[in-house]
Length: 238
Figure 1 (tube, rainbow, N blue to C red):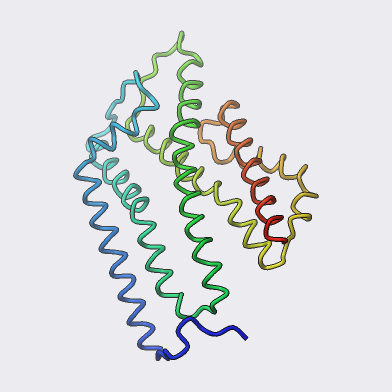
Figure 2: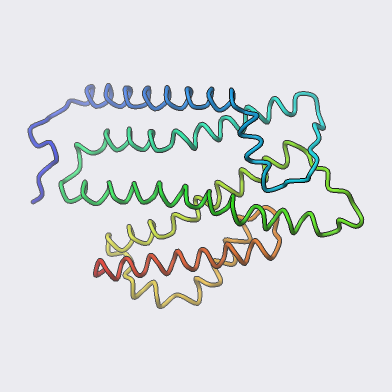
């Protein structure tokens, strides 16, 4: 049998609850500090998020729209930046209860998951968002002038960024399923036809613009991620 990471440490239920409270407190403090910092530098963050839509005029359609949207963006950005620290606190809490084999697996999986999530956000910001926005701007630009609501634009961008980051977790899900012997790499390869259909459906759901260009790009990215998950499982003999 595998030994625990800390075999000589026995904690009571109250000590576990106290440690959990401490981890939640630390994670909450980090989240609040980063959210306040993001709100303080909201103009810089708004400028960065506006880059995919250069040349578009934004309107404040209701009293306080910019202020409340700034709070929303600061919360999302604060959560995004604090997520690695939150995951680190969760890892510290559960690590003592894992076996040596489990701890050697979960840490690389968590680190890879974080990297894939941020890779998805960068991919959406650099490729998906400009493609979607250019399609929407050019479509009908001879009939209507593109002047957008500040709040609706940021809802669009934030939804696209976060949903793409989540979609990039596909290899992690595959690896976990393979390690647990639920599905093998061979099983995943057999269903490749369904994956192509599924990637198209997922891309249609994730992309808020529903334009074909963005859906095709995201669908191809999902297929590549799925294929990379199969290759990794092959290397792991799963």
